[in-house]
Length: 230
Image (tube, rainbow, N blue to C red; front, side, top):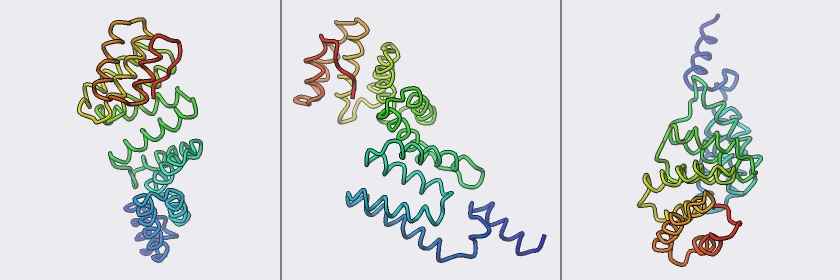
């Protein structure tokens, strides 16, 4: 093996950049430019332009897990759930290699987004799997246990849902929107036949989220057979 070939293979092992692309500096400059442009557009609130920028970046470096993850999360914001899940699954597959691992923050964002995408599609089994992976990495991740609780509620596993909502309240009791978790807890308690506990939970939700539409809806529906946590 020639010396230049050895150098190119080392670049690949170190950076995850394919040797055939290693000498193409302008393409990587453009990739970084488009990735930064995607982030800027997100900060401005223009999600469609952000997606366009990330698509250009991905065309230059299709095996970048971070760019694939960024694309997936943008698809999620656009409510394009099938594409979001495909991109995030690809990011996770690429990001578990030895040369281009996703960091902890990226992994938690990936599993939360993947769970949300599957849950929106009604695929509760895949949503459960993603949320469990998230909570293994970050047990107190804001909203993580609440999302898993919603999944279990939809699966009619109310005792598991109750435990998840209680975990969310314990881990993130100072969260500004924790009243929604109290409302979710009330609904699952009621479904589980725990009327007294459900009434206490909805009272706490009302105190913390006075006037919130979801809290009001759960309060109105707690004695009916309707209602799915949000």
